[in-house]
Length: 352
Length: 261
Image (cartoon, rainbow over all chains, first blue to last red; front, side, top):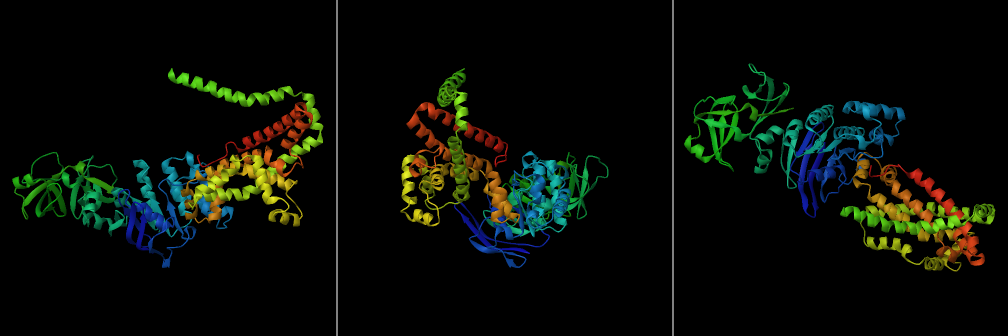
């Protein structure tokens, strides 16, 4: 539906190189990358705010590379929202409706529908300067949605918002996406990316280094950058359940395996991330404070930046990073049966 | 304590400047009797000259604003060859002697020039007319408007304009609904400055037109022909009327939105 073909753009000290992407209708497409990697520039190019040096942008089969900004029907929510400071919330949201020759009743109904969707019904007649970060972001979303865009571009929409509100906004974004809105979302936060993306592209130094579903990218990172950037080897999709005999722990079920997890999230679908550094390998079962003990078989050992990566099959693959010394001491080798353990508190649950 | 001394000394120095501005005006007001003022108000020659001055400057300001504000916008938003030179040219009328500005203007609009003869054919001339006075006023005062408007536009983030266009607004709608309202306060300030500066212009005006007589010319003429006592009440009345206008306009423009809130 939106296709970006071989886009390049040079700046004096930075350039986007040969970017190609395909976003299908209804996708929640997340562009993940560190700051200064060109994510925002790419959004500006899609919106038409910045011209490209070469390449094409195709929207629903039409070449819009040279189309005027106002004719693209692509809405942009800026990182700082860019609400019009002299207009009240109502007029900000109604801005795009006013030049469509709608009647004032139609405009009012549409604005009310939008503020109900984003949850800011009580601030319609306030000026942007008086809004909190979360409110401003919701208003910016409503204003963008008022244009009924083919594609909604979000530039780091959750970056200036505190944690609790961030969860709420995430579910709002998910809700908007489920209503069929195609979204391209730029972020540097892998947790945000995992939690929202139906498709993910990782951008590094102006280049797309990998595209795929979050699972594909997190489980099979194509470059060291992604692995490092994402920083997580053990990544599972599954479901959070009540623990059989503990009230402060939860169980996370993935492919028939139950992990013990310390989290205060509700029971729902999500991802579990376990840092490889926190996984301990031992020869025998030993009683310790770790709640997770699994017997498994080493299926691979290879050198990593800090020691060795040991991949163990416990029903699912789980990776541990151990020092060379420890490897020698325990004489770890392929096909050896060992125990692995990790604390329930070292696993991180991210809800979908 | 050091800081207090600094502020004290600076306040004293600043106070002297304030006194320098206020004392002559106050002196003039105090040395003019109510009787003289009443007599002057009754003098239709004086009052019509005041109205004429106010009107010509106002009309000039409005007419020139139609082109000066777009110029300020282009200068604020676009980078182009010799931009600095253009900004220098805009400020030229402020630095040249105003009588010289009048002479310069005369070389373009007098009867034997292309512009002057064309205007003559259309039924109006510039030399010795209100239209000529308007040009003289605008020539020396339009830099105030342009400079202020450039500052105003500079304070409006380009991102807001892009945001408006992302929402489907044309460049024209973006300008009139976003940029202009946000830059309005400095622009209004510039308009008031241009109007005020135009009204008070003497040098350029007297070169272009002795008659119809604007008030600054009338004050000079009365002073020259009859002396201080006759010039004073006219000056007092003119200043008073101008002040009332400015205060009203300033109040009107106060608390208006701008790009910074």
